[in-house]
Amino acid sequence: MKIHYYPGCTLKQKMTALDISARKAMERLDVELVEPEGWSCCGAEYPLTEEKIVGLAAPIRVLRQVRDEGGDVLVTTCSFCFAVLKRANKAVQDDPLKHKRINAYLRDDIQIDPLTKERTTGFEDYNGEVKVLHLLEFLRDRVGYPKIRERLKRDLKGLAVAPYYGCRILRPRGEMAVDEPDSPRLFEEFLGAVGCSAVDYPFKQECCGSYVSVSLPAAATEASYRILRSAAMAGAKAVAVSCPLCFYNMDHRQEAIKEAFLDFPGLPVVFFTQLLAWALGVDKSLLGLGEHAVPADGLFTEIPLTEVRP
Amino acid sequence: MRVKLKSGRDQRKFIQRIEELSGENVFACYQCGRCSAGCPMAPEMDLLPNQIIRLVQMGLDEEVLRSRTLFLCASCFTCESRCPKGIDLARVMEAVRHVLDPKGKDAFGPGEISPELAQELPQQVLVSIFRKFAK
Image (cartoon, rainbow over all chains, first blue to last red; front, side):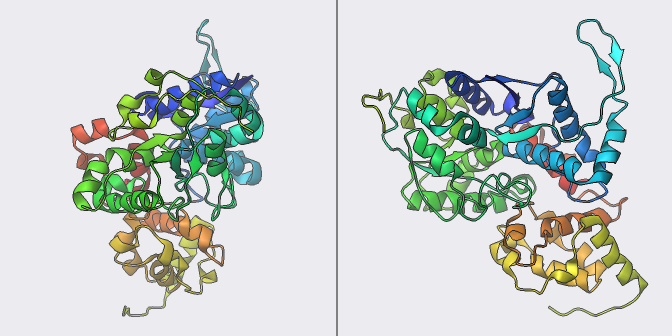
């Protein structure tokens, strides 16, 4: 199965672990992730005011490209990209004015054929034909947990992992809603399918501080500390995330968290795709463990699967 | 908190502009405070999220526009998911940032990040913070 996949800017340079482990894991599930030709940054933030229409141009351009390549689904792993693409898609579906204005902007795009250098223009209107899915949703709805269980190669021995949703994949409830915003199960079910045991803790959908970590690092340090402490107190051996920025705030910032909060012992943070790839038998050197500030190697110990799981 | 009430054309215009930009009915708010109770950035704020919306209801633009709260909102939508009246407060915050003086200084601009830090930060955080806090 070939599926369109949008990695986004961060996964291509700073957080390649998420990109590579997702690809390797999906290969093991017979899914090939194909990037749309000439994709650009999605804009990272969905414009929240009615007048900032231009912020929709980049995500709609990506979605239109997917449609023009014959795709009907676009999968992302980064929560920010997912939110922007999904909300922009919904805006052109539901809001006739936004649909009209954004298509008027994009109609005159010039496309240059990479081989013949021929310039073409005059695009067809994009009407929200593509469905945007987060990789976690794709695994649940299109691949299915039974297939993942079938393909498991390694035993994670019920490793206690705290699922961390963050803000973007659950809210706003009317637009994102991959699951119930206040009591989601999506991540827990995924962890169960790869052989981990999901730790329940109250901070799983709290905000990590997001971009405020640049303008006011102390605020993000404290927000991330609250999440990590809550997970550690609930018995987690690691926190699993899907967003590169959550990863940055909770992993790269952990040195600062330890300095500010002396009671915090440290907790490794991993991408959910690393757990998936490892359980499916992907080589450890392909998990991108070198990008972690808090060493996570210890979580990935070689235990072959001996018995067939029910 | 004490404020001096004003009523005039400017006040009405401010309220109308915020509603137009945000697409939210600010008068739906009855000050239950659940937005502030759940806000992860509330400890750093000078005005709590529910106070911002109250001041918008009263059309007190000056008080709202000088608050540092506008540049602490991380748009995590926790308030949105908890509001019993269905107001998306993150949209109200964005609308207020939108009406700030367009010629004014960036609340957070590229000059405030050292080259070393820029090397380390994931791209998405740079794009998102400038989209939110720079002009």
